[in-house]
Length: 335
Image (cartoon, rainbow, N blue to C red; front, side, top):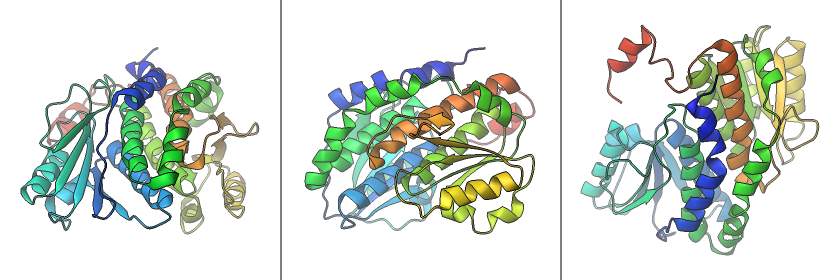
């Protein structure tokens, strides 16, 4: 069984290359407060962008990544702010309301959305890729990351320029990652497991959260993505046989914490796999600069979602809206 999701995953190198070549971004003011806002996958992209900016500036530029729901309703906001809102289809309620609120207050606004999304209310509109046919979003995430990377790089001085240079290698790195064998055997071992824990250190923790969302949407299994250290504090009380786990192997020194978490999981009979750049990792992705890992580390986890969906006979394109009672329940509220 093939899904629209499969084609979207495969389209990412070309789509990102197009964004890098064609999308012109404004230069944001490093001296003004900056908010990145979105919902779900878009919020994960915003969290990555905030991490990038903090790191590239040596901690001098602080940006917030906020839920568009919070920004639309309650978060402090002034005309001094620069507000970047990410929304894949451009039709969700609160990203639009966040932009309207920001504009009413006189803040500078940037909207990042798909090529065929409605025209948002923003000072600058940056388009990513055509709207996805699958509701388990993939290419709209990584192309949004590409636009955000260009925004962040242009305001981060010399380090930002080096970052932008490295960004040009991402399409080839994703191609190399897609050339890895499909993770069918791992999917077979995780398809009957629930919940599934995903964990990573630093910027990889954001990838873990995004991967957990993909698994929930595409396979209907409950999954949770958290930071590796937090996975060792408290959560072990809930670990048990029958669960699954995927640990993203850090490119940085994590003081042995991934190894210790993996040992604890295996001791409790949790089916545990690693995702990284090493030959010994179960799921592999191409080696890139640490800051650029969100582009490639998510790819084997996107593919894992598709393979589990095939085994479980779920539909990642519809995310359960094609079956009752989910059809009625998920249509009963407006997004």
